[in-house]
Length: 302
Image (cartoon, rainbow, N blue to C red; front, side, top):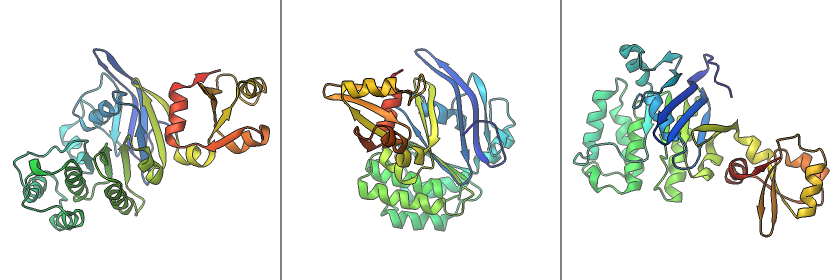
């Protein structure tokens, strides 16, 4: 995944930078190709929300470019053109953004003024599916129900790109699975895409095609999800075994990542099958997004 634009990219971010006191977003590259779900991961304060707000025009970057469907949406872009492309974007933030005194039904009326393609029938069907009473006030919704309302509103105008910032936070496991089913249905025709920021990496393992990790304002890795969950592994070594690995030549200089624990040393194996062939006596588990990210962010490099 690189940031050079092609017509298949719904979102293309190049060299995005933004300075705040105490924090810098630096040269962020990110793309969302049509037909793909991109998981955006990193700790709180790593730069995920700043990146997303830059895409939506809620903050303006200091440098770099952002294109939605091939249209530049930067600070100096045509307001009319930006408005047109944003009609094709659905957004769910980590907190409900609708007025607290508004009813669920009134949210639909509000959204109908915002989106030309708003489908009231679709919205009402989603309210029923999510178990959301029309007459309930936004302020009386639980966090989980607020997220369901936001998701229903985001999907009811049939966007081509869906941007989710911790959208499944606050949902119980059954509700999260239900939400993921709706996202799978949304992706079914292959022309749409999702940028999904989430701390719940098990959700991303179920739905994402790519994983992009940001830390301290910089992209650490951008990789196909299957390269993590299907190919990578975590080896559990003793000190002598680790020295054998480190001096074997199996890893190129700068590619060996490890974390020391009181009980041993964990090593990231990008290809666990090749690793197992070379070191058959060393215990080896499949990697998941959390273990892969932990070693990439916190591991010693040699």
